[in-house]
Amino acid sequence: MMGVCLGLFVMAWGVVRFFSVGAAIGMCVVAMVIPPVAAVFVNKRDPDDDWWNDPRWDDPNWDEPGHDRDRPDRERPDHDQRP
Image (cartoon, rainbow, N blue to C red; front, side):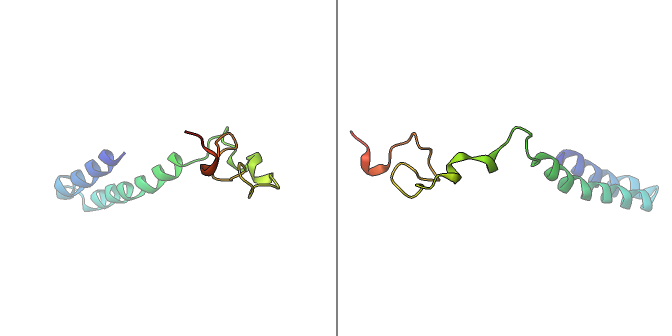
């Protein structure tokens, strides 16, 4: 997508402006809109993504060892690890 944006910009002011300044400006406007639109579509949530439904957030003992929100329960706390 970035290549398309750069291509539009270079073609607009390198070639098209000699024939039509309005078309060159229009090409630059299109090139300007592509990156934010691409970012919105790429960062769209996946239908199977259920990050808001993580059962660890409902754990009343989350602050006890082995119930850390940032680490899954299957990992041992640092002070309990054995060599």
